[in-house]
Length: 173
Image (tube, rainbow, N blue to C red):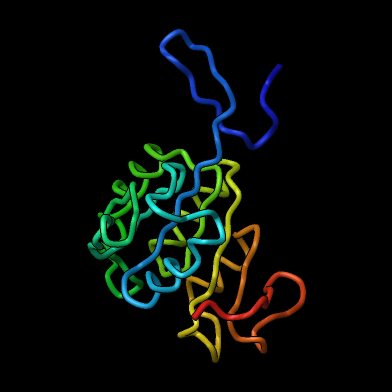
């Protein structure tokens, strides 16, 4: 029987495939974005060494052992003011995405996270964006774009919710 729509099929060396297990790819920029993503880990069972089904990516190095993260990759940083870095970062983002083959992508921002949300949407993965608490007055540029792309879009300031696309469910920190 073929896998359900939106499920990744992993093929073995004989070309046989089974629907992939749930794999969560959690992506953020450094600093506050990473702190908020890390605070969300219990939501997907991100406990001690994460059981191997959650993969983390951040633009700054972290102590995997100290945080109990089994799978981590540092990714290049970019933003709207560093156009050349945007283009030079894309191959690393695509390579990591192809390596992990996530069924769910979660990001707290910023631009690197948006790239992963878009790739997730294009490949049938479920996508979740949590807008940073730093953007309590208005949505970030990446957040604005993500609000149209992500399957679920959460804001941490109640007045930014619209009851449709942008959901307020409390704050992370």
